[in-house]
Image (tube, rainbow, N blue to C red; front, side):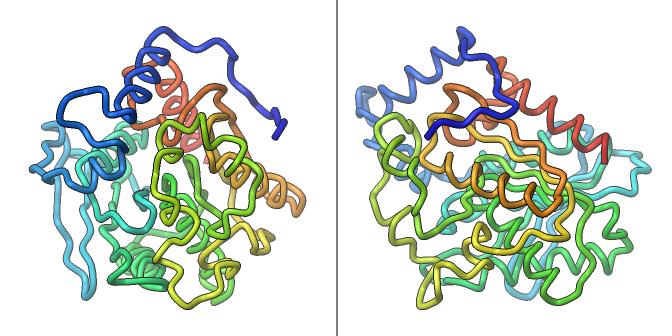
Length: 308
């Protein structure tokens, strides 16, 4: 697939080349004691207590069917909230790497409260469990006094798709929509119909080595129609959506998901900042400040939040 819009430099930073090399060797099982793919390794990790920076207060919020973590800056007076929906293919619960993402959102959010939803996952809880929890979390923020105009929904991978699915749901129920959406490498097509699913299979260092059922027969779908926009938001009507920031790497199997959504949303007048990072892997933003490309991505997130 050939596509260039707001593309970053073709030249990878030195650290990016090193990290990509490590990922490639890791997936080959070169390092002692490692498994052959990152998802299996992550699924088996012990979720040790994650320590946030000292200037952040952490509160665990229990809801009827799930829990949330709330991050706030000490002494912050911000009236903004970021509702963060983590990735993991709808099969992974909240892990420490996603907590680090929540911390990064707190840093670039200018004192905004960050609510991380530990939504129910498949196969035990197929569609619409994750969407129901995301909707309940959004309603909770409104009940807490946040205006919809001061709420940003953010997500990566499955969480990015879930953010858009939530917005489709809000539209369908005539509920107030958020001020913006931030989607990193969003999974928006659970039918896996895009050309990049095959074209990038060999170069995708994160998803290319996964078991086929993760992307091609995901248990979250259950007995539902995978083209339901609440499952695959790509198939929905984006009219009336808030401004969106979509970031994706050229080496991702999900690359075409972002391309199609950006094109469909722009065609109906949605303000979309679509940024393509050449040579980048799935959710490279997890690298935080370790490499130039991820630092640029987070700087762009900060600008997007400030513009809203």
